[in-house]
Amino acid sequence: MKDDRVKFFDTTLRDGEQAPGYSMTLDEKVRMAKQLERLGVDAIEAGFAAASPGDFESVRQIANTVKGCAVCSLSRALRRDIDASAEAVGGAAHPRIHTFLATSDLHLKCKLRITRERALEQVREMVAYARRKCAEVEFSAEDATRTDPDFLCAVVEAAISSGASVVNLPDTVGYATPQEIAQMVGDVRRRVPNIDRAVISMHVHDDLGLAVANSLAGVLAGARQVECTVCGIGERAGNAALEEIVMGLRTRSDYYGLSHGIQTEEIGRTARLLSSVTGVKIFPSKAIVGANAFAHESGIHQHGVMNDARTYEIMTPASVGVKNTELVLGKHSGKHAFEERIKTLGYELDETRVDELFADFKALADRKKTILDRDLVALVESKMSARKHPEREWRLDTFVVNSGNHMSATAQVTLVRNGKARQEAALGSGPIYAAFRAVEKIIRRRFTLEDYRIEAVTERRDALGEVFVKISDKRGSYRGRGVSTDIIKGSILALLNAVNQMLEV
Ligand code: KIV
Ligand code: ZN
Image (cartoon, rainbow, N blue to C red; front, side):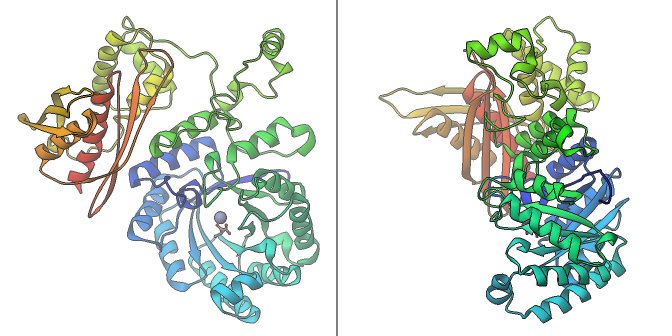
């Protein structure tokens, strides 16, 4: 066996971001990448540089920002893709080009329409080409688990002799069983003569719910890199969840006996950040990071945990950065306590933002007796969108809405921009619709409402409502978030957040 350290290759920003509902803006991707670096991943797949100018730019910016781990870009085994990747990761401290070609007969015949011989040639040519452009090259045999084992071994051998130092064996369609994965990795290790010159990597999808089990089976069989995403987001049913693999290795170190470089205490923060930038809530029963992962409802369990948490907890909440005691702030809390708490929650904000947020916090404390970490996170996240031109932003001044069961809803909204107020009134089938129409009239730009969601941040009647809005115009789509104890106000704030981004484009 090569060594006992399992490397974590995070593809949240590439395979994860491809999943519907998980697209991120450039700023959001950079924030996620910085957090992944803090989490201690060994490599970040920052995107697919050739896919679009936006993808190229995010790979480039992440490569220029993140210095603590490898930054990589995906490329088909084509010169133009490899060129784009090489250019985009050029500024990285540890650049990597990840190039792939499908190797199963199904993909060769029905998708690529090439023979095995041609595929083998393409692997040789393109890996060598990538290697001339970048010191570290990873090659993936797409659909490896449905590839003829003899051919897979030939491809892996060719990729390594052409310069790949990581060979990835993806279960692209989540088809394999753990036993088959172990067999495949074992075969490659036994039959590929130059395998000691490369690290074997597992990249597994979750179509049959086996992604984590299959990744761990690969590791047990000798793979030393796992490709995964935060919360397992990814194509179709998703990829293997990073937090589940690493906590499996950690909690069952007696069984696996393997090490890793992940700071597991950063897991909670990383999952929360993903949820807040994408607006997709973490499923309550999600292993490791779901709200219920450390909750004990039944009397027998509560009794056991009170006597000794190990009775029903196989890992501590603190080990994954989930606090079971939330610190409470209230209207008597000072700016220092507020600032400290924000820092502990992982935010580094400039003085102006802290002042603005502290004012919002005080206003909230007048309406809500206790302010929990979840409230603070929602408050901060609602203000995190990049502000390139604050002077051009529309801000809410006042609003009045009227609605009832025998009338159309009406809304009168006043917005201020650069010291000048503008007011409009509008009708709607409900108060939020009416308020949004009034905003549309004020800004004099049409948009389509693509998504609108509202959720209570905490329990109880005085809970903050967190509103998530997605709008689009001809040039793109824009997301906004707003929080308030008043859901109409929260909705207008979320809309303005999105509108201000739309107007910046
Ligand atoms: O699932 C897959 O096969 C992939 C490759 C491009 C690595 O995502
Ligand atoms: Zn994949």
